[in-house]
Image (tube, rainbow, N blue to C red; front, side, top):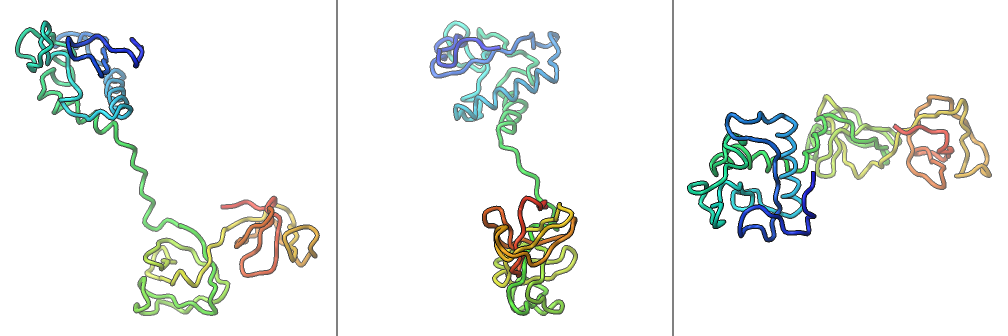
Amino acid sequence: MTGRPMEATPACILGQNAHAVCIENLGNFDTGGDAMTTAQRDTIIQMTAKLCTRFNIPVNDTCVVYHHWFNLSTGERNNGTKNNKTCPGTNFFGGNKVANAQANFLPLVAAAGQPPVPPAPPVNALLKYVCVTASTLNIRTGPNAASPKAAAPATLGSILRVYQENNGWYKISASQNQWVAAQYTAVVTRATVTANSLNARSGPGTGFPKIGAYIKGQELFIEKEENKWCKISMDSKWVSKDYLSFA
């Protein structure tokens, strides 16, 4: 629940309330009191982390403090040595002393405030498709022109799968060291025909002559799109984008 508006000064520690945010955790978290539930624990950590992130508060024992660390009558910080309340509790995340906060609470808050790390893609995940634009394109064992040839050259118009990129070179095999120079390729997009029969035309529109057709499920590689029409890679044929499904 909320208490005072965030714009208002809280009423927490004598003399320490200006420019502060106060959290009251409901429950008796002294030793022998209430047992903190998992939901309470996670909420306390997440709420503290979100407030620190929102207001750019460093997560340390100077900026994130316990009521117990301050003299109840004077507001002087004495780290719980004289005339102090026990809150947030003698069993709050292992205790209410500064050392307990440093060891058991603040690291959890700091970790919760970090942005999630996106999972790394699999090492041999398919990145994209490319079309060979040179008459022949050497395939080498490493990402440089000095590496030995690994296989017969790829020919003009060949579609290659790209699994890694390294300084202007593409790895085109998931299981073998086979690399090509990226400058002799063009990125294409894989699509599948969804119509029973899809007309191919000489230009991007129904006003252009029909010069062929593709059947349902046929795989096409698109090099260019114009007004919802797609040009087939290394070809003069165009098809309507409405009848394609893109992988």
